[in-house]
Length: 209
Length: 172
Image (cartoon, rainbow over all chains, first blue to last red; front, side, top):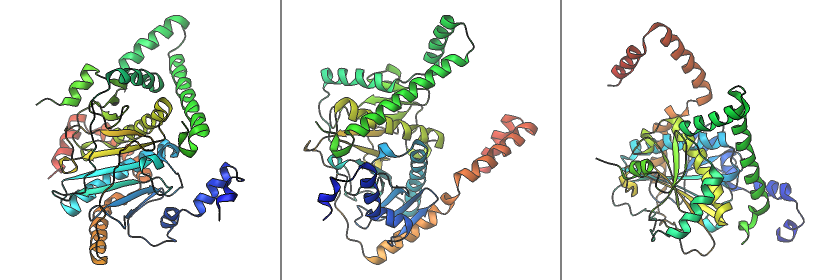
């Protein structure tokens, strides 16, 4: 029914449509009943109706985001801190021996509902609910390329390295210590901009390729 | 006892990002090429032991790492998996977030067998969890400023060491 319409809609109209039809938005707002185990202003946790184990929870932001990449940093931080709390709640409630925390971003990753969520699965011995992560041989050559590309993109620095970099900038510009900080900030936001741009281009419909 | 991840962090072995709190490294037994591990620099075994500030940092970094995999590898999705505790197949006792790049038809599948639970069983699980999440309901926004003021007040009158021992005595 909606298929022919979608091609005519623009990005924001499609998002609106998704929100309107999103079961998990309805669960978050209380329109669709669910077994809520936790709720605050930003997120809600409900029991999964097809649980891997008793107490299998779905923790999601109330706001509609399809994948993790779209969730603002502050909201995601909050979700992970709550996930930590829910994991602990699972440990206490079921005397579990651990928690599997799982998220799928994108259809290729096995995502089913277009609303970002964390699965929090309390685990006990012999529950056969394991997500076995297979292991393959380490592709040394390929890994070198990937590592190089990733470290350029992520560009992490420790305090020590920052101090060295700041010294260099200081020498070059003989200005106050404010400068390197500013330069660093600018670098970060540019990085994020390029990421958002990339997502806007290829983030939809499985990234192409 | 040495920790494999602590050693790898020290050796900077396949570390693609590090700051003072957290690091990202390539998994040495990857599910897919580009399989990343996001972990705290300090040794914490499970999430429950990890301070909130560090958890926040890990969350932001996991998201960043996940996004960069799309860019670098042209992946069309990612899985984010934490094996939290030995009961959850955790092999190395150092908290880490697995970020696995995914493409359609890559042969990977993370699916569990759904359990058929009765309404009663579901209801019981709900009650048991709600009991435990009560204290979790405290809004972090409201709590933090109060805490800061408390610390300030305590810092003015009590020496830091005294304050720490006081805190320790509180734990039963």
